[in-house]
Image: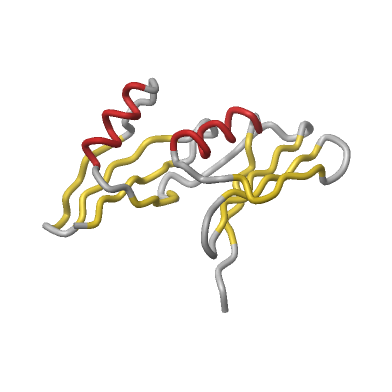
Length: 120
C-alpha cells in the first residue's frame, strides 16, 4: 500500500499556503475549488503530499498534541535562524536524541506541529 497524502483543515488558505511554500519549501501541485466555499490545494514533491482544505463554513482546526509533520533540513541551526527572521517562534527544541539526528518544532498557522529534522 502506498501512502498518498496527509490532510490539514486550514483556517486561512492563503496564510497556510505562504507557510508551506515559503517556510517549508513545498511547491503547489494542484489547486481547485471543490464546491461552494471549499478549496483544496495539494503541495509537495515526490510521492507524499500535503493536502490543505479550506471550508468557509468550518474555520476551526483541531490536532492532537502528539501529531506532527516532519520535514528534512540541511541544518537545524540555519533553519532556526531563518524562522526567527520570519517571525516564527520555535515551539520546542532543538533535541538531539542521538548523534545522527537533531530536530525542533514550530507550529503552522493552524496550530499543527511541524518538525524540522537534520539527519547527520
